[in-house]
Amino acid sequence: HHGVPRSYHDAAAAQQISLQALLTSKAEGFGPGSSGLLALDWWNGNRSTLGRADLSGLLVGMTLNTRAEEIFHALVEATAFGTRAIVESFTDQGLAVSSIVAGGGLTRNTMLMQIYADVTGRQIAVAGAPQASASGAAMLGAVAAGAAAGGYGSLTEAVARMAPRPTELYEPIEDHRGQYDALYREYKRLYDHFGRGGTDVMKMLRTMRRAE
Image 1: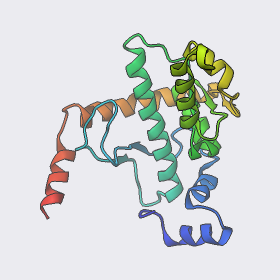
Image 2 (image 1 turned 45 degrees about the horizontal axis):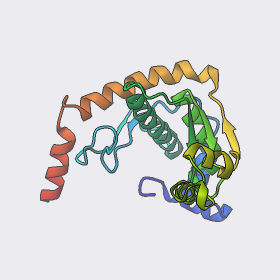
Image 3 (image 1 turned 180 degrees about the horizontal axis):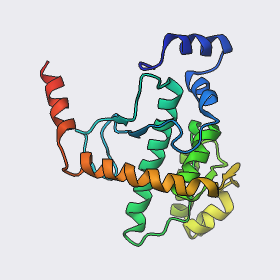
């Protein structure tokens, strides 16, 4: 909101849509990296996988012609890159991740969901339950109760019986994979440099800001 021109706020209000919906509509035709920007989405630090609250955001590639929708698209890509980093932290430890299930309001953003599939190289399924966390808790409760009390003997059985089918499936677009792999390699270089000791400039800047 803070970095978006007033004209965008006015246009969203005139169309009676959210600012996110307006930015999405302007960015929907962008391809991988077509904004010319690459970001680290550490606006609240990096909790996974670095566990560092003293990190902050980074945006590379801005020019005098950079538009709000291009920044928005790059930030969506950055969150997808961050998700890929988390997935790879699992796979590097021998824990296979074959597909991803997404829930919550952002699943209504089809551009975002497709970018996540393209960047991670995995199918993204949108949870069929409108309250996925509550449904998961109910499944765990059914397992805790046990089959004798009307529940289920295993979580696998509970999921099979209680989980609704996904409402949508997003498959990676093959033509985007190579481009996103190249962008991700650069993302990881920035990720390691700013997050793993290449420089502590983000921490220094936060300290100076608190001192004002």
